[in-house]
Length: 136
Ligand code: TYD
Image 1 (tube, rainbow, N blue to C red):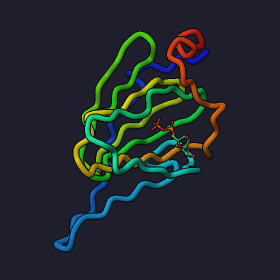
Image 2 (image 1 turned 30 degrees about the vertical axis):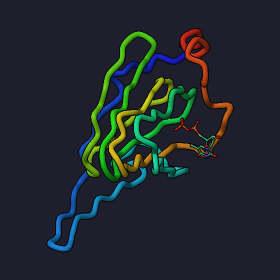
Image 3 (image 1 turned 90 degrees about the vertical axis):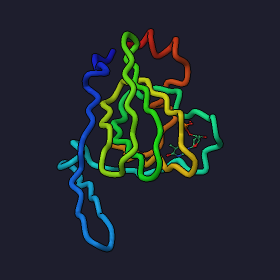
């Protein structure tokens, strides 16, 4: 049982340090993200037309950024869906536990950077949407 809804998913603007030599954005534990980052992973070399991440998580919290390029993040709580179009390296979506998500419409060369609240654990996943709905 998990009560998170798509309205608990939040688009967050990160601070951007602009210099004439380029920009830097930092993400700190418990500051820009409300959890301790235990894992960082990134999706890259995604073939055109491919979609990723058709799954839900029981406990994992995540913060998702288009570090390069753009993609659509579709969040789903079993009742409602929201689509976030991410296309700036200083914008990210904070996802609480218990949300189903899919990522698609990747631009060529895009990088989906994910900060996660725990290490990889297959048991935390719902791979089947019907199972996810029953749990919700
Ligand atoms: P998965 O989470 O299913 O990717 P996506 O939902 O984006 O398509 O992971 C794909 C594969 O990568 C799966 O076999 C598990 C592995 N994997 C790890 O080993 N560590 C990780 O941190 C992640 C996210 C995936």
